[in-house]
Structures are given as structure tokens and as C-alpha cells.
Length: 212
Image 1 (spheres, rainbow, N blue to C red):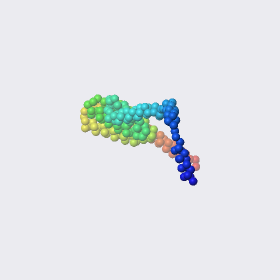
Image 2 (image 1 turned 90 degrees about the vertical axis):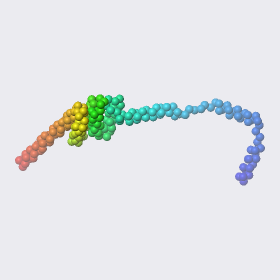
Image 3 (image 1 turned 90 degrees about the horizontal axis):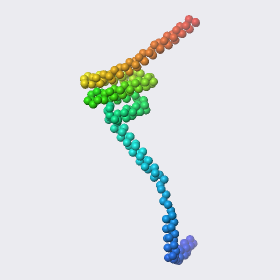
């Protein structure tokens, strides 16, 4: 039944004859409508230049950070190196690593003919003060003192191997000893307080014994 209906419709469709005027009129109408349509711009197209700029900026920053890792005291990128190391120390909490890096800068500057020892020593001193403050806050005075002992020994070993570095490393050793003395002095102030508290507890215990 369905096939007969479809065959009938097909036959009627094929019997329709379209005049040439109707074809021309339809094409003209279609052309008129297309000419009136406006092409809408892609909404996200204006964002592409901004995205490219941000990507380029990130790439430039990455190259600067990588290049700063090889900078020496006195170089233009050395402050970037210092800043990035401080950020890493703040995130990880490992301020002793900064001491080791700045100590290596001091050693390299002291044994290198290029002048940069003053800047290296200054940054080393700042790293000592910052690490000392954090060690006291976290109660890691003993670990910090061990780090200072190791750095002082390291400086003296380089002095023996390179007598020409004597002047440059001597100031770094003095800074190390000063901070180590501050840490030791802070540590020595605590035992008397503990002993005093212990004596007070003993006196209270003896007083209770007499009252009984």
C-alpha cells in the first residue's frame, strides 16, 4: 500500500513542469537574501591576540628565570636569581639551601678574577639573617648551628686551597661566626629559665612535704 502511494507521489512530482521564468525568479530571490545577510564575526577571535601576548610573556619570563640560574654577583640577572631563590625557600621552608647557594656565590666570586665579592658577601649575610630568624621561629637552632659550622669549615678549606681568596672569604667567615654566636647565645639563655622553674618545683614539693 505504501509503495503505491510513494509511486503515485513520485509520478505527480515528475509531471510538474517548472517554467524558465520561475527558475530565474527563484535564483534572483535567493541572491537578494544572501546579499542582505551579514557575516557574524567569531566571538572569540578578539581574544586570540591577548592569548598570544600572555603566552609570549610567560615564555619570556621562563627564559629570564632559566638565564638567571647561571648569573653571577654583579650580573644584571643576579637579582632575579636571588628573588627566585627566596620564593622557593618561602614555599619549601628550606632556608638553609639559600645559605649554601649564597656561600657558593661567595666562593666563586672570591676565586674568580671578576669583581663581585662585595655583592656576594652582602647576599650571604642577608641569607644568614633570614635563615636565623626562621630557625628561631621553628625551634631549629641546633640544626641551623650545624649548617653554620659546615659553611665555616667549607670557607676555611677553600682558603687553604686558594690563598688568593683569603680576603674575600674572611668577611664571610666573620658573618658566619657572628650569627653562630647569636644562635648559641639564644640557646644559652634558655637553660637558666628551665633550671629556675625546676628549682621552684622542687621548693614547692619540699614545702608540701613539711606541711604534711
